[in-house]
Image (cartoon, rainbow over all chains, first blue to last red; front, side, top):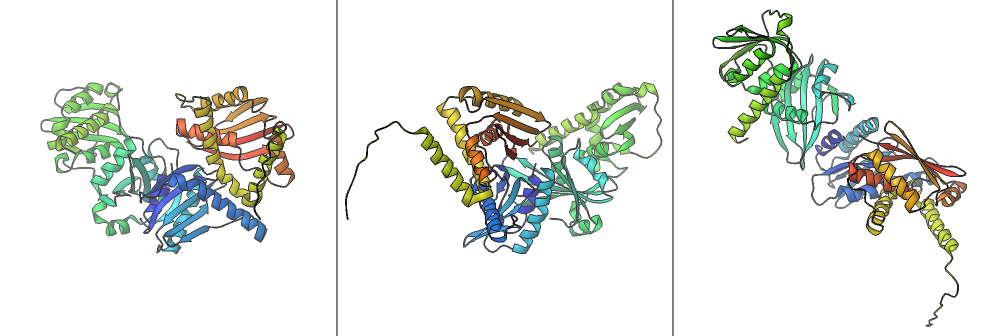
Length: 117
Length: 219
Length: 160
């Protein structure tokens, strides 16, 4: 169902994996171009990281709202955005990816996912 | 990635190719899984007609353009692998300038032998109206609507009508594809006796013929 | 200082205390993770389904229809495990509402709500979601968990 979204994001240079994940941690659909990445295993963690970020925002800013969660490691980045009420969209990238471009594509595709759920 | 203005994503459709008419000019973006592969494609459309196609294997990075791409996408459509279609408004001429080999021809005239079976399949799928098919001394007239033959009769030769005329044409299809001609020009009139009940058989027969050709070519 | 002391149980194990400890663990998880606790749902559901199938020999094989899976699961949940007094499944299109009367975890959920924490995961519903995904290939989203005085309602969405 979300092959279009996954294909669109995997075409961006430096994007190695894409996952549409329910906020319950269920992998709705995902694909990695790098065989060492198991998107199924990452799904629950990504949902938890995003949800916990919401809780931090609530605690600190008194508002349970997060635009984007970015995890940066020397080996790469994991960027997650909300995709409607019940899901998140996440990408796993190389460390030197064009972040601006990834963000634009993430936002655009998150809207598509939200409209399809 | 092609440039364009995103219009909508559609997940409920009977035939994804029908969605081409939702934009005056632009493209349909589709993607599907083929075994372990993830494939994607763009169908360039203008006034509801497909004028170009690009297909790619996302994970392998291989790109096909033109008739081969169209064939790849149509096969995915036929297998029901496409679950969502994104519609974009775009300047098709600009895209075709960037990707000239993406162009596909859907002429209203031509010799089948000069192109391949895909062109005839595409014409029958997309066209709504009369098609005149000639092969040497034999000729048939058919009325099609999105791949279904509604009426048929021979214009020269045996004098068969309706389903029998379609079957006769099917028997000759190998020769028609190789040496025949077809056109959507000219005027044809049909009478109730020309009505066809088994309207899918022509397209199915052509698809089988294409599969046979592929197998003979070793894919 | 170095020493050792061994204490042996003299009385019966207190089930009430065990439940209280479990509730406090749940409370701790909710307190720190908040909405993040929801992300644990699928993993908990996987483990629960695994336990139901492997340890209790429950078999959902051969039923690929989400509605049938839901019915069978609810039947097992009520009649085999006695998880709740009564279960009711309401289906409207792809939206499913599971209503459980007096379920085992009602008290824990009410405790959370009393402390201002809206429940975001429901292991039984998560296990149903995993079962439906595993046997029918359809994804299930848990949209809402509503806690009432005597029952819990879980609203789910089955994706095409």
